[in-house]
Length: 352
Image (cartoon, rainbow, N blue to C red; front, side, top):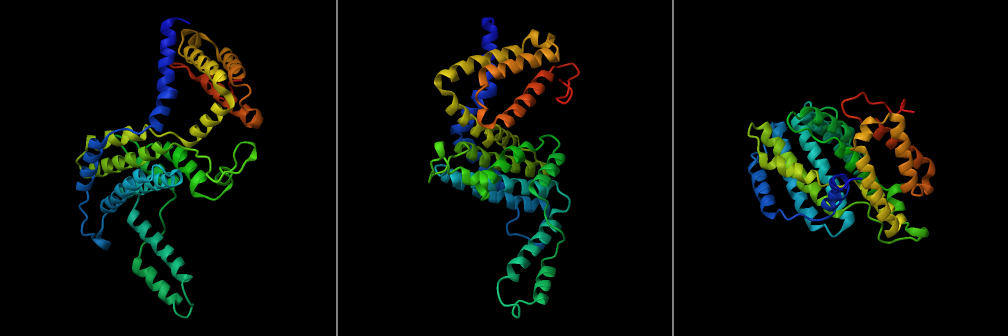
């Protein structure tokens, strides 16, 4: 490989692998810009005093923005406490998504009132004696709140919001790559959250393994404030580039929890010597996929090279989960092999 080819490979590795990891795990000093965004976001809150039943969807989104600003402060205070900061970041993303749905959803006020009425009825139904809180009282409360139906789930909201954005689509992958893993690892009591207390060789851990990066949680809270403020300003007919660039910048620095888990497991299993060999191999792989040879090779030749590469550099990594690892390698190989610009790509189902 030529010197220029290695430099280009190293640049692509930094931009595609190590750069995002560094950005997602380290703090970023943007105090002045953050204060500008917070001050500008608070100027969007025109719903004080709260109009009650006369509130509009935009005003409801402003209320979500106020909560996002509060959560942003809480996240920074909790950055040293892994469990707390992860749960707060998940709440920040959920709040941002609800706020965006208020702007781009179909009659969100009716759905939210309907959901609130049903939730309050469930709480009151188990609060006291049936002869005190009767069905007639519950029906009257539900009718007073009004509304119909309930808000869609988070994925449905993300899909609606993505379709509603014109100039800056909401990244739907944040739901799948961030919200779902945070729910499974932190919010829910399930196998994944419990197994975080099992360390190497089956040793139980009081402090569970942390499958994320704490400063990614901070970037999440910051990005959600910028994203929601930008959407509200856009709806008001006053687009604000500061909000948009601030949100995009921080959302781009978030590491996915599964990426962190995979990276930590790989570093533990490889060791320093194999890690150095792997870095060289990754440079060779980047150089190959950006070379004229890659463009000229047939899909079959690419598949052969990539399978050889995985077997040589990562052959032992998937020993514990052999079947899943083989499926993963097969998927990655066929995807990379078919990735040829300006030509017809071959689907993974037919590339063999």
